[in-house]
Each structure stands twice: as C-alpha cells, then as structure tokens.
Image (tube, rainbow, N blue to C red):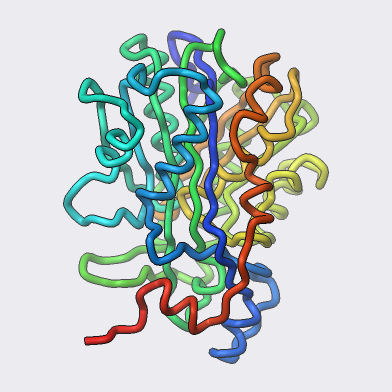
Length: 350
C-alpha cells in the first residue's frame, strides 16, 4: 500500500507539552513489592490530586496555542487520544475546547487506541486540514496511566501529554512528507468494562506486538518515500520502556544520536497516548531548519502510525514561546510509595 499524503500540504503550526511534577522512583515500587526494577525506568511521572487527562491536555494545548500564535477560535477540531479519560460517558475534548476559548463551531471527540490514540488524533487532524475542510485542527495525546499495584506495568505507567496544531504547510514549524499506518488484531493488552486496571499478554507485548507493528510501519513509510535511516536527523519512537525503542531503532538502522534526544522513558516513564508525542516535542525544542524527523507510535491491540516531518525556518522563532519539554522533566518532586497511592486515589476510605 502507498504512503498517505493529504491533498493539501499541511504542517505542525504549534506544539506543546505538559508533565506533572511528581516522580516515583522504580526503587520505591521494588521496595514495597520485592520486584526487580532493572530494565524498567528510573522514575515515572505521577499526577497530583487535582490533575487528570483533561487538565494535562489543557496545559499542553495552551502551550501549543502560544507557539502557533493563532486565535483559538480558528481551531475547527479538538481531538484527544487517551485511555484514561476522566468520564466513561462525557467527552474530555469539549472541556478542553471550552477552556481554550475555541467557541462552538468546532468538532470535538475523544479517541481510544491504547498508546496510539494520540497519533490517531494527529492523523485525523492531518486529514481534516489536508482535505480543506478546516484551516486548523488540534490533536492531543494525554494520559494518567495506571498499573495494578505490584504488576510489571506499575513500574512504567506514567502521566503526561502533548498537543499539536495542524495547519497549512506555509505556516508550519515542520511540514508533513507522508505517513503510514499499520494495524492487526493482536491481543497483547486490554481492559474490560468495569475493570480498574489493564491486563497484558506478557511475552506478546514485544513480539508480535510492539516490534512487528513499529518495524512494519516505518519500513513501509521509508520505502514509499524513498528514505533510509541516514536521511533523518532524529527518530522518535513510542516508549513503553527504554529498551524497546532502542532495539527497534537499531534494527531500522538508526544510531544513538538520532533517537536518544527524544527518548524520555527513563526519566518520566510511559505516558501512554502522550509517549511518542512527548518525545516529538522534546525533539522539536532542539531541532533546526532542514532537519528531518521520524515519529512512530505504537498502540496495543495493535497498531503503529509513522510520520515523516521536515523542519522549516519557522521553528526557531516558535521554540521559546512556551516551556520546553525538558523544563517540565527537570521540574520534579520525588515522592514515596505511600504518597503515590494517595495521589492516585488507591486508598479506599469507605
């Protein structure tokens, strides 16, 4: 199948990130449950008592608007990808649109596809603007991911989000060269209705989950565009842990200096729908005109979206207009396991 390209050239007009300040060390989880934190992450970000997917999305979206330098009323869509929307029935996207001052003439929707939900929203925004139906659209990936206490997921399931405004290519900080999506019915991760925590297929999460989909989407994209790993200054992958993206990058021919600037997992954990989009924001904070960036997501269930972006002369003028992703990473407060349980509402008092 051919690479996907919109009829009208589009770009990323604005971008923004947000990461909660609280950090739980993996050593704290190991101390309580007696597990081995080796091979997981050093820290994971934890939302405060007054933070959820909506508040994270609003903060990231405001940063994106600041960099885009547009009136929010121009946004004709606000789409949020997440697997931890605060309401089972009531959209997060309408709350975010209201907080931004978008107005009523707006499409709004919540998307779900595990950790791929954020780039799924981005694909939809590209299609809407690329078809000419809208001038600008916002795509957000945000999560307050949870893991069952004592489970392997608890070491990495984290919180954070990133927002992107898609608009005309001539106004973009980075223009889209093409994208490719690859999906299959692979039951590596799931949560049934009424269950508090997701479950996972253990050995299936790597193969045939993460690696089969990520490698397939990237190889198909690069083949369709006539690109190779050496054509990219940066490569950003979904980060369920530090090991998976490193292994995928090496198999695709990327070197450490290409993927390490966007590899945040060891410092903040896996922000699920915000994971690869946060990595992309960290790269955009340091990228220069002419740099080519590969962005790749993965969502269990399973699927992967791959994008090729080319940085324009506009980006350096926008980078300082909002806090950098690195600034949010370094603004941290270390907490213990008991505080983590309190912040996550896992101490039932009635």
